[in-house]
Length: 433
Image (cartoon, rainbow, N blue to C red; front, side):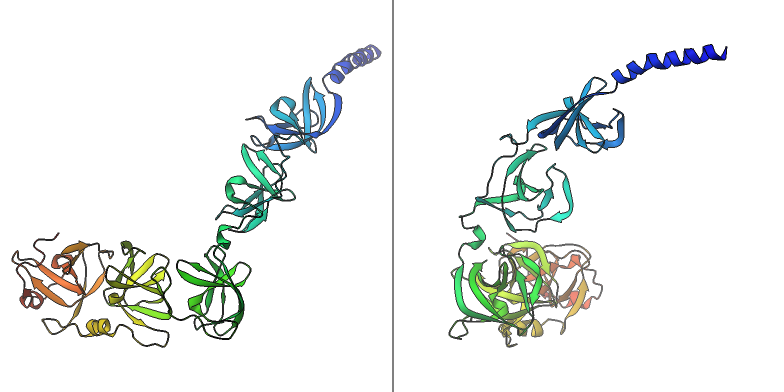
């Protein structure tokens, strides 16, 4: 009885063996010369036995070097990694040297990285962690290919950058940041007090600076925003206002001569904002939403006249009116004493000034133009009250700066002497344009 059972079991095993062999691995071919581009949602992987690998798939449209091919359960698969296989129907197969894929040697082109766009990918289109190209750096471009539907250029072995991330120029074409450069052989820069921030080729500040009193050779000069900059090293520039520049003969050359934009360089100038703060103006004299707080001090790097008023520049496209601050030159001398005297001695009809805080936002009234001017200071801002007037409509206005008035209802003021001693000007602000 036991013998019969053993024979039956052996027979079953022999009959099943051919079926198991038929459903397993059959043909194996070497296809290392092929590239596979994963079709949408086709990235499922299986192991060498045809079992789906959990939590592991290839991204849509990514490209992979194909290894050997084999048939599992009647389906063709390509090897993409150790014990990882992808269905042949899930990839678009190309020859590695297919001209539509990666054969375009562009060694005659240069790519300059756009701001914040230096991300790199590998040969398979996967982002390379902890590896990016710096803003505005330039790279020789190699081959180009399409990955994930986007064009890429090779910048190093297994490193590619998107064509959308770079400004592409011919190798023999002068980049825009190199135009207008004048050579300065034998020139020297001695950094002034306060040091000098380093700018890159595109005029953007870097994290570096040069210390006060240090001397450097400068080999080139160019204008940026109407002001001169000098090159101390490759990709490193300083503003001329931050250094004494000497030519090859040892003569100091950077004074206050006007350039062709009507801007006078003001090296070493400092502006300290008056009590009422100051609005910020554009290069065209238009008021911006920005403002400068009272008693803050700022480096002034240029001066020009707009609409008959003198302005000083504190940053690109940011200017302060001269009559809103005390201006001192590089030697500490006040250059607008009349405005300072007005600030210190503006007479008031009650014998003194006082501080008051706004409780609401109101635009300034400019009595010199009979117009309202945007007030960038919100509710809760402190002002010095210099004078009060009352018009024939019973409305009170307080002078908070030269030609700048705010309605009394913008403040919470309870002492009646301010109102009792207000000047009566019947038509003040009654027909504003």
